Amino acid sequence: MNFRILTCLIVVSSSIHLFSQESAPHLKGKVKISIKEGTFDCDLTLSNIPRIQDYLIRLNSGMNLLHIRSKKPNDFVPIYDKSDKDSTSTGESSAYYLPGNAKNTKFLPEELQFRYVGKFPVANDTIENFSRQDWKGNIAFNGISLRTDGRQSAWYPIIYDAKKDIVYDRVVYDIEIICPDCATIYANGNKPVSSTNAHLKSNEPEEIALFCGNYNVFDDSTITILNPKFPEEKIKQFSTLVSSYKKYYEQKLNIPFNQTPTFINTTPTSKKNGWLFVVYPTIMGIGWGENGLAGIFEEKSQKFYKPLIAHELGHYYFGTIKVFNTELGDMMSEGFTEYMALKLTEENQTEKNYDEVVARKIKDLKDFKPNPFAMVKSITDISDRETYVYDYAPIIFIAIEKEIGKKKMWEWLKNILETQTAFTNYDFLVSTLKSTLKNDKKTASLINDYFNSPEATANAIKKITEK
Picture 1 (cartoon, rainbow, N blue to C red):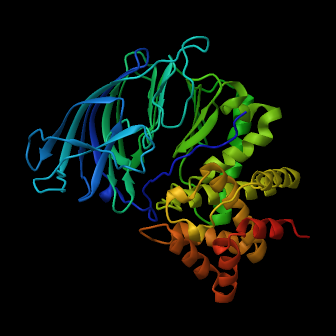
Picture 2 (spheres, rainbow, N blue to C red):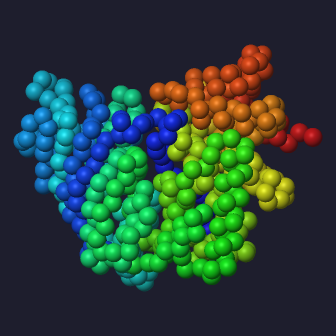
Picture 3 (cartoon, one colour):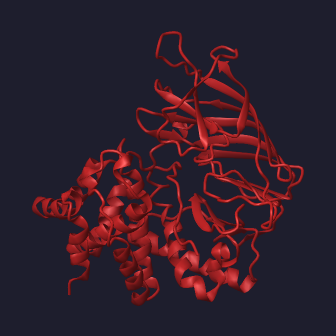
Protein backbone atom coordinates (compact mmCIF):
# COMPACT_ATOMS: atom_id res chain seq x y z
CA MET A 1 0.00 0.00 0.00
CA ASN A 2 1.37 3.41 -0.95
CA PHE A 3 1.01 5.74 2.02
CA ARG A 4 3.05 8.59 0.56
CA ILE A 5 1.03 11.73 0.08
CA LEU A 6 1.42 13.57 -3.20
CA THR A 7 0.34 17.15 -2.98
CA CYS A 8 0.74 20.45 -4.70
CA LEU A 9 1.23 23.95 -3.44
CA ILE A 10 -2.13 25.63 -3.36
CA VAL A 11 -3.20 29.27 -3.43
CA VAL A 12 -6.61 30.67 -2.48
CA SER A 13 -7.73 34.16 -1.52
CA SER A 14 -8.07 35.32 2.06
CA SER A 15 -7.05 38.30 4.16
CA ILE A 16 -3.66 36.64 4.65
CA HIS A 17 -3.25 34.96 1.28
CA LEU A 18 -0.49 35.83 -1.15
CA PHE A 19 -2.94 36.80 -3.89
CA SER A 20 -6.16 38.76 -3.72
CA GLN A 21 -9.15 38.49 -6.01
CA GLU A 22 -8.02 41.71 -7.71
CA SER A 23 -4.65 40.21 -8.73
CA ALA A 24 -6.00 36.85 -9.89
CA PRO A 25 -6.54 36.27 -13.61
CA HIS A 26 -10.12 35.78 -14.83
CA LEU A 27 -11.01 32.77 -16.99
CA LYS A 28 -14.15 32.67 -19.12
CA GLY A 29 -15.43 30.40 -21.86
CA LYS A 30 -16.63 26.94 -22.82
CA VAL A 31 -15.22 23.44 -22.25
CA LYS A 32 -16.58 20.33 -23.97
CA ILE A 33 -15.59 16.96 -22.50
CA SER A 34 -16.29 13.33 -23.39
CA ILE A 35 -15.38 10.77 -20.73
CA LYS A 36 -15.90 7.90 -23.18
CA GLU A 37 -13.62 9.39 -25.84
CA GLY A 38 -11.14 11.09 -23.48
CA THR A 39 -11.45 14.45 -25.21
CA PHE A 40 -11.33 18.16 -24.41
CA ASP A 41 -12.48 20.97 -26.71
CA CYS A 42 -11.78 24.36 -25.14
CA ASP A 43 -12.45 27.99 -26.01
CA LEU A 44 -11.17 29.98 -23.01
CA THR A 45 -10.26 33.62 -22.52
CA LEU A 46 -7.89 34.96 -19.84
CA SER A 47 -8.33 38.56 -18.69
CA ASN A 48 -7.17 40.63 -15.72
CA ILE A 49 -3.71 39.28 -16.51
CA PRO A 50 -0.97 40.55 -14.16
CA ARG A 51 1.54 42.86 -15.83
CA ILE A 52 4.60 40.60 -16.00
CA GLN A 53 7.67 41.03 -18.19
CA ASP A 54 9.30 37.60 -17.75
CA TYR A 55 6.28 35.33 -18.04
CA LEU A 56 5.35 31.92 -19.42
CA ILE A 57 1.96 30.38 -20.17
CA ARG A 58 1.68 26.74 -19.17
CA LEU A 59 -0.72 24.44 -20.99
CA ASN A 60 -0.88 20.67 -20.92
CA SER A 61 1.37 19.11 -23.56
CA GLY A 62 -1.52 16.94 -24.78
CA MET A 63 -3.54 20.01 -25.76
CA ASN A 64 -3.23 21.03 -29.43
CA LEU A 65 -3.54 24.75 -30.00
CA LEU A 66 -5.55 26.23 -32.81
CA HIS A 67 -4.34 29.65 -31.73
CA ILE A 68 -3.53 32.04 -28.93
CA ARG A 69 -5.37 35.23 -29.83
CA SER A 70 -4.74 38.72 -28.49
CA LYS A 71 -8.12 40.27 -27.64
CA LYS A 72 -6.90 43.46 -25.92
CA PRO A 73 -5.47 45.98 -26.58
CA ASN A 74 -5.66 44.78 -30.21
CA ASP A 75 -7.56 41.87 -31.76
CA PHE A 76 -5.17 39.71 -33.79
CA VAL A 77 -3.50 36.30 -33.83
CA PRO A 78 0.20 36.74 -32.93
CA ILE A 79 3.04 34.25 -33.38
CA TYR A 80 3.77 32.26 -30.24
CA ASP A 81 6.88 30.37 -29.21
CA LYS A 82 7.78 27.64 -26.71
CA SER A 83 10.36 27.81 -23.95
CA ASP A 84 12.55 24.89 -22.93
CA LYS A 85 13.70 26.68 -19.75
CA ASP A 86 10.61 26.32 -17.57
CA SER A 87 12.57 24.47 -14.90
CA THR A 88 9.74 24.48 -12.35
CA SER A 89 7.34 22.65 -14.63
CA THR A 90 6.84 18.99 -13.75
CA GLY A 91 6.75 17.89 -17.37
CA GLU A 92 3.03 17.67 -18.03
CA SER A 93 2.83 21.13 -19.59
CA SER A 94 4.44 23.09 -22.38
CA ALA A 95 5.50 26.69 -21.74
CA TYR A 96 4.43 29.31 -24.29
CA TYR A 97 5.11 33.02 -24.72
CA LEU A 98 4.55 35.75 -27.30
CA PRO A 99 7.82 37.26 -28.57
CA GLY A 100 8.09 41.06 -28.45
CA ASN A 101 9.30 43.28 -31.28
CA ALA A 102 12.70 43.84 -29.65
CA LYS A 103 15.18 41.01 -29.26
CA ASN A 104 14.80 38.88 -26.10
CA THR A 105 11.55 40.57 -25.09
CA LYS A 106 8.04 39.24 -24.54
CA PHE A 107 4.66 40.68 -25.38
CA LEU A 108 1.78 40.07 -22.97
CA PRO A 109 -1.66 41.35 -24.05
CA GLU A 110 -4.28 42.41 -21.52
CA GLU A 111 -6.65 39.66 -22.69
CA LEU A 112 -5.86 36.34 -24.41
CA GLN A 113 -8.12 33.78 -26.06
CA PHE A 114 -7.01 30.13 -26.25
CA ARG A 115 -8.64 27.62 -28.58
CA TYR A 116 -7.39 24.05 -28.33
CA VAL A 117 -8.37 20.39 -28.27
CA GLY A 118 -6.88 17.34 -26.59
CA LYS A 119 -7.38 13.60 -26.66
CA PHE A 120 -6.19 11.37 -23.81
CA PRO A 121 -6.13 7.60 -23.19
CA VAL A 122 -9.19 6.04 -21.58
CA ALA A 123 -8.16 3.26 -19.20
CA ASN A 124 -11.43 1.43 -18.67
CA ASP A 125 -10.25 -1.97 -17.45
CA THR A 126 -7.32 -3.50 -15.56
CA ILE A 127 -6.69 -6.55 -17.73
CA GLU A 128 -5.54 -5.07 -21.02
CA ASN A 129 -6.55 -1.42 -21.17
CA PHE A 130 -4.60 0.30 -18.39
CA SER A 131 -1.56 2.57 -17.94
CA ARG A 132 1.70 1.69 -16.24
CA GLN A 133 1.53 4.63 -13.84
CA ASP A 134 -0.93 7.22 -12.62
CA TRP A 135 0.03 10.47 -10.92
CA LYS A 136 -1.35 13.73 -9.61
CA GLY A 137 -0.87 15.79 -12.78
CA ASN A 138 -2.41 13.16 -15.04
CA ILE A 139 -5.53 14.05 -17.02
CA ALA A 140 -7.09 10.72 -16.11
CA PHE A 141 -10.04 9.12 -17.89
CA ASN A 142 -11.08 5.75 -16.44
CA GLY A 143 -14.17 5.16 -18.58
CA ILE A 144 -16.70 6.45 -16.07
CA SER A 145 -15.10 9.75 -15.03
CA LEU A 146 -12.49 12.41 -15.69
CA ARG A 147 -10.13 13.43 -12.90
CA THR A 148 -7.65 16.27 -13.13
CA ASP A 149 -6.06 18.87 -10.89
CA GLY A 150 -5.41 22.37 -12.21
CA ARG A 151 -1.85 23.48 -11.46
CA GLN A 152 0.18 20.43 -12.39
CA SER A 153 -1.94 19.15 -15.28
CA ALA A 154 -2.46 22.70 -16.62
CA TRP A 155 -5.59 21.68 -18.51
CA TYR A 156 -6.38 25.40 -18.71
CA PRO A 157 -3.79 28.14 -19.49
CA ILE A 158 -1.78 29.19 -16.42
CA ILE A 159 0.37 32.32 -16.21
CA TYR A 160 3.76 31.92 -14.49
CA ASP A 161 5.92 34.80 -13.27
CA ALA A 162 9.44 33.43 -13.69
CA LYS A 163 11.16 36.30 -11.87
CA LYS A 164 9.01 36.16 -8.73
CA ASP A 165 8.33 32.39 -8.88
CA ILE A 166 4.56 32.91 -8.74
CA VAL A 167 2.13 30.52 -10.43
CA TYR A 168 -1.25 32.11 -11.17
CA ASP A 169 -3.10 28.79 -11.19
CA ARG A 170 -5.93 30.16 -9.10
CA VAL A 171 -8.39 32.08 -11.21
CA VAL A 172 -11.76 33.78 -10.93
CA TYR A 173 -13.79 31.82 -13.44
CA ASP A 174 -17.02 31.81 -15.43
CA ILE A 175 -17.09 28.68 -17.58
CA GLU A 176 -19.64 26.43 -19.20
CA ILE A 177 -18.78 22.73 -19.02
CA ILE A 178 -20.58 20.42 -21.43
CA CYS A 179 -20.22 16.68 -20.96
CA PRO A 180 -22.94 14.70 -22.81
CA ASP A 181 -21.85 11.34 -21.32
CA CYS A 182 -21.69 12.61 -17.73
CA ALA A 183 -24.33 12.53 -15.02
CA THR A 184 -22.52 14.90 -12.63
CA ILE A 185 -20.10 17.78 -13.19
CA TYR A 186 -17.80 19.15 -10.48
CA ALA A 187 -15.27 21.97 -10.59
CA ASN A 188 -13.31 23.14 -7.56
CA GLY A 189 -15.06 26.11 -5.99
CA ASN A 190 -18.59 24.97 -6.89
CA LYS A 191 -21.06 22.40 -5.68
CA PRO A 192 -21.42 19.33 -7.93
CA VAL A 193 -24.14 19.71 -10.57
CA SER A 194 -26.29 16.74 -11.64
CA SER A 195 -26.46 17.52 -15.34
CA THR A 196 -24.69 17.12 -18.66
CA ASN A 197 -24.26 20.88 -18.86
CA ALA A 198 -23.16 23.22 -16.06
CA HIS A 199 -22.52 26.96 -16.05
CA LEU A 200 -20.07 27.40 -13.17
CA LYS A 201 -18.81 30.61 -11.61
CA SER A 202 -16.40 31.43 -8.82
CA ASN A 203 -15.81 34.99 -7.64
CA GLU A 204 -12.98 33.75 -5.44
CA PRO A 205 -9.71 32.59 -7.04
CA GLU A 206 -9.64 28.80 -7.32
CA GLU A 207 -7.37 26.17 -8.83
CA ILE A 208 -9.81 24.41 -11.14
CA ALA A 209 -9.68 20.71 -10.38
CA LEU A 210 -12.34 18.70 -12.24
CA PHE A 211 -14.24 15.51 -11.50
CA CYS A 212 -16.87 14.80 -14.15
CA GLY A 213 -18.64 11.52 -14.76
CA ASN A 214 -21.27 9.12 -13.52
CA TYR A 215 -21.47 9.12 -9.73
CA ASN A 216 -23.66 10.05 -6.75
CA VAL A 217 -23.06 12.75 -4.12
CA PHE A 218 -23.20 12.85 -0.31
CA ASP A 219 -23.33 16.23 1.46
CA ASP A 220 -24.05 16.85 5.17
CA SER A 221 -22.56 20.41 5.33
CA THR A 222 -19.51 19.09 7.22
CA ILE A 223 -18.16 17.13 4.29
CA THR A 224 -19.10 16.41 0.70
CA ILE A 225 -18.21 13.04 -0.85
CA LEU A 226 -18.34 12.46 -4.58
CA ASN A 227 -18.86 8.82 -5.57
CA PRO A 228 -19.53 7.69 -1.96
CA LYS A 229 -19.52 3.90 -2.25
CA PHE A 230 -19.47 3.35 1.51
CA PRO A 231 -22.08 2.39 4.14
CA GLU A 232 -23.99 5.41 5.44
CA GLU A 233 -23.01 4.63 9.04
CA LYS A 234 -19.32 4.69 8.03
CA ILE A 235 -19.78 8.00 6.20
CA LYS A 236 -21.32 9.59 9.30
CA GLN A 237 -18.38 8.37 11.40
CA PHE A 238 -15.99 9.84 8.84
CA SER A 239 -17.85 13.17 8.92
CA THR A 240 -17.50 13.26 12.71
CA LEU A 241 -13.79 12.48 12.40
CA VAL A 242 -13.22 15.29 9.89
CA SER A 243 -15.14 17.72 12.10
CA SER A 244 -12.94 16.85 15.09
CA TYR A 245 -9.75 17.31 13.05
CA LYS A 246 -10.91 20.73 11.83
CA LYS A 247 -11.69 21.83 15.38
CA TYR A 248 -8.27 20.66 16.57
CA TYR A 249 -6.46 22.84 14.03
CA GLU A 250 -8.75 25.79 14.72
CA GLN A 251 -8.03 25.61 18.44
CA LYS A 252 -4.27 25.25 18.04
CA LEU A 253 -3.85 28.01 15.45
CA ASN A 254 -6.81 30.22 16.40
CA ILE A 255 -7.63 30.54 12.70
CA PRO A 256 -11.09 29.40 11.48
CA PHE A 257 -11.42 26.48 9.10
CA ASN A 258 -13.80 28.19 6.72
CA GLN A 259 -14.22 25.66 3.92
CA THR A 260 -16.22 22.45 3.67
CA PRO A 261 -13.85 19.80 2.27
CA THR A 262 -15.01 17.81 -0.74
CA PHE A 263 -13.66 14.24 -0.84
CA ILE A 264 -13.51 12.46 -4.17
CA ASN A 265 -13.47 8.66 -4.33
CA THR A 266 -12.10 7.39 -7.63
CA THR A 267 -9.83 4.79 -9.19
CA PRO A 268 -6.48 5.21 -10.95
CA THR A 269 -5.81 4.50 -14.61
CA SER A 270 -3.17 1.97 -13.48
CA LYS A 271 -3.35 -1.34 -11.62
CA LYS A 272 -1.53 -0.50 -8.41
CA ASN A 273 -1.20 3.22 -7.70
CA GLY A 274 -3.02 4.67 -4.70
CA TRP A 275 -2.63 8.07 -3.06
CA LEU A 276 -4.32 11.24 -1.85
CA PHE A 277 -3.81 14.81 -2.97
CA VAL A 278 -5.43 18.10 -2.13
CA VAL A 279 -6.60 21.06 -4.20
CA TYR A 280 -8.61 22.92 -1.59
CA PRO A 281 -11.43 22.46 -0.89
CA THR A 282 -11.08 19.19 -2.84
CA ILE A 283 -9.28 16.14 -1.43
CA MET A 284 -8.93 13.38 -4.00
CA GLY A 285 -8.56 9.76 -2.94
CA ILE A 286 -7.32 7.61 -5.82
CA GLY A 287 -6.89 3.85 -5.50
CA TRP A 288 -8.41 0.39 -5.69
CA GLY A 289 -10.22 -0.75 -2.54
CA GLU A 290 -8.47 0.16 0.69
CA ASN A 291 -5.62 1.77 -1.26
CA GLY A 292 -8.00 4.62 -2.08
CA LEU A 293 -10.42 6.65 0.02
CA ALA A 294 -12.07 3.39 1.07
CA GLY A 295 -9.08 2.78 3.35
CA ILE A 296 -10.43 5.28 5.85
CA PHE A 297 -13.51 3.09 6.29
CA GLU A 298 -11.57 -0.17 6.75
CA GLU A 299 -10.75 -0.84 10.41
CA LYS A 300 -7.45 -2.57 9.66
CA SER A 301 -6.13 0.38 7.64
CA GLN A 302 -7.60 3.28 9.60
CA LYS A 303 -4.50 3.84 11.73
CA PHE A 304 -2.56 4.51 8.53
CA TYR A 305 -5.22 6.63 6.85
CA LYS A 306 -6.20 8.86 9.75
CA PRO A 307 -2.79 10.62 9.72
CA LEU A 308 -3.11 11.03 5.94
CA ILE A 309 -6.51 12.68 6.30
CA ALA A 310 -5.08 14.86 9.08
CA HIS A 311 -2.26 15.85 6.73
CA GLU A 312 -4.56 16.75 3.84
CA LEU A 313 -6.82 18.81 6.09
CA GLY A 314 -3.72 20.56 7.42
CA HIS A 315 -3.08 21.85 3.92
CA TYR A 316 -5.97 24.23 4.42
CA TYR A 317 -3.46 26.22 6.44
CA PHE A 318 -0.05 25.38 4.97
CA GLY A 319 -0.50 25.63 1.23
CA THR A 320 -3.94 27.27 1.16
CA ILE A 321 -4.18 30.10 3.69
CA LYS A 322 -0.44 30.55 3.22
CA VAL A 323 1.18 30.08 -0.15
CA PHE A 324 4.81 28.96 -0.29
CA ASN A 325 7.41 29.51 -2.99
CA THR A 326 11.22 29.43 -3.52
CA GLU A 327 13.49 26.44 -3.03
CA LEU A 328 12.30 25.83 0.57
CA GLY A 329 8.60 26.49 -0.05
CA ASP A 330 7.72 22.85 -0.68
CA MET A 331 9.55 21.81 2.49
CA MET A 332 7.62 24.33 4.57
CA SER A 333 4.24 23.49 3.06
CA GLU A 334 4.65 19.74 3.45
CA GLY A 335 6.93 19.67 6.49
CA PHE A 336 4.80 21.87 8.73
CA THR A 337 1.61 20.15 7.55
CA GLU A 338 3.10 16.76 8.41
CA TYR A 339 4.21 18.11 11.80
CA MET A 340 0.63 19.25 12.54
CA ALA A 341 -0.74 15.87 11.48
CA LEU A 342 1.72 14.17 13.85
CA LYS A 343 0.60 16.36 16.74
CA LEU A 344 -3.03 15.57 15.97
CA THR A 345 -2.17 11.85 15.91
CA GLU A 346 -0.39 12.19 19.25
CA GLU A 347 -3.31 13.90 20.97
CA ASN A 348 -6.33 12.32 19.22
CA GLN A 349 -5.27 8.73 18.61
CA THR A 350 -2.78 7.06 20.89
CA GLU A 351 0.76 7.90 21.96
CA LYS A 352 1.75 4.46 20.66
CA ASN A 353 0.55 5.34 17.14
CA TYR A 354 2.48 8.62 17.30
CA ASP A 355 5.65 6.93 18.54
CA GLU A 356 5.42 4.33 15.77
CA VAL A 357 5.18 7.01 13.07
CA VAL A 358 8.08 9.02 14.52
CA ALA A 359 10.20 5.85 14.83
CA ARG A 360 9.46 4.97 11.21
CA LYS A 361 10.54 8.43 10.07
CA ILE A 362 13.76 8.18 12.07
CA LYS A 363 14.43 4.78 10.50
CA ASP A 364 13.89 6.24 7.01
CA LEU A 365 16.57 8.84 7.77
CA LYS A 366 19.23 6.23 8.68
CA ASP A 367 21.17 6.47 5.40
CA PHE A 368 19.79 9.83 4.27
CA LYS A 369 22.36 12.63 3.89
CA PRO A 370 20.31 15.81 3.44
CA ASN A 371 21.52 19.35 3.05
CA PRO A 372 20.39 21.39 6.07
CA PHE A 373 17.93 24.19 5.36
CA ALA A 374 20.62 26.89 5.22
CA MET A 375 22.50 25.04 2.47
CA VAL A 376 19.51 24.66 0.14
CA LYS A 377 19.99 27.31 -2.55
CA SER A 378 18.13 25.49 -5.33
CA ILE A 379 15.56 22.71 -5.63
CA THR A 380 18.41 20.56 -6.97
CA ASP A 381 19.99 20.71 -3.49
CA ILE A 382 17.16 18.46 -2.28
CA SER A 383 18.14 15.04 -3.62
CA ASP A 384 15.16 12.99 -2.37
CA ARG A 385 12.14 15.26 -2.21
CA GLU A 386 9.74 12.89 -0.41
CA THR A 387 12.18 11.89 2.33
CA TYR A 388 13.21 15.51 2.79
CA VAL A 389 9.74 17.03 3.16
CA TYR A 390 7.84 14.16 4.83
CA ASP A 391 10.54 12.70 7.10
CA TYR A 392 13.51 15.03 7.53
CA ALA A 393 11.63 18.33 7.94
CA PRO A 394 9.05 17.10 10.51
CA ILE A 395 11.77 15.37 12.55
CA ILE A 396 13.64 18.69 12.66
CA PHE A 397 10.44 20.45 13.76
CA ILE A 398 9.72 17.88 16.48
CA ALA A 399 13.24 18.42 17.83
CA ILE A 400 12.69 22.19 17.88
CA GLU A 401 9.41 21.58 19.71
CA LYS A 402 11.38 19.65 22.36
CA GLU A 403 13.57 22.74 22.76
CA ILE A 404 10.91 25.46 22.90
CA GLY A 405 7.73 23.62 23.96
CA LYS A 406 4.47 22.91 22.14
CA LYS A 407 2.90 26.27 22.93
CA LYS A 408 5.74 28.23 21.32
CA MET A 409 5.81 25.81 18.40
CA TRP A 410 2.16 26.50 17.59
CA GLU A 411 2.85 30.23 17.97
CA TRP A 412 5.63 29.89 15.39
CA LEU A 413 3.28 28.11 12.97
CA LYS A 414 0.66 30.83 13.41
CA ASN A 415 3.34 33.48 12.88
CA ILE A 416 4.42 31.81 9.63
CA LEU A 417 0.81 31.78 8.40
CA GLU A 418 0.16 35.42 9.22
CA THR A 419 3.45 37.07 8.26
CA GLN A 420 3.28 38.81 4.88
CA THR A 421 6.22 38.14 2.56
CA ALA A 422 6.96 37.97 -1.16
CA PHE A 423 9.30 34.97 -0.76
CA THR A 424 8.92 32.13 1.75
CA ASN A 425 12.66 31.45 1.76
CA TYR A 426 15.30 30.66 4.37
CA ASP A 427 15.37 34.24 5.66
CA PHE A 428 11.59 34.09 6.17
CA LEU A 429 11.92 30.82 8.11
CA VAL A 430 14.58 32.30 10.40
CA SER A 431 12.88 35.66 10.88
CA THR A 432 9.55 34.12 11.92
CA LEU A 433 11.30 31.85 14.43
CA LYS A 434 13.22 34.82 15.82
CA SER A 435 10.13 37.02 16.15
CA THR A 436 8.25 34.17 17.85
CA LEU A 437 10.89 33.36 20.46
CA LYS A 438 12.10 36.92 21.13
CA ASN A 439 15.28 35.33 22.45
CA ASP A 440 18.32 35.88 20.24
CA LYS A 441 20.53 33.44 22.12
CA LYS A 442 18.01 30.59 21.89
CA THR A 443 17.24 31.34 18.25
CA ALA A 444 20.95 31.30 17.38
CA SER A 445 21.37 27.95 19.15
CA LEU A 446 18.45 26.38 17.27
CA ILE A 447 19.68 27.71 13.93
CA ASN A 448 23.17 26.38 14.62
CA ASP A 449 21.95 22.89 15.60
CA TYR A 450 19.05 22.35 13.18
CA PHE A 451 19.28 24.82 10.27
CA ASN A 452 23.03 25.14 9.59
CA SER A 453 24.69 22.00 10.83
CA PRO A 454 25.51 19.04 8.54
CA GLU A 455 24.72 17.01 11.68
CA ALA A 456 21.18 18.41 11.93
CA THR A 457 19.61 14.96 11.53
CA ALA A 458 21.74 13.44 14.30
CA ASN A 459 21.11 16.46 16.53
CA ALA A 460 17.35 16.17 16.03
CA ILE A 461 17.20 12.42 16.65
CA LYS A 462 19.31 12.80 19.78
CA LYS A 463 16.98 15.48 21.14
CA ILE A 464 13.83 13.47 20.30
CA THR A 465 15.07 10.20 21.80
CA GLU A 466 16.76 11.54 24.93
CA LYS A 467 15.12 10.65 28.21
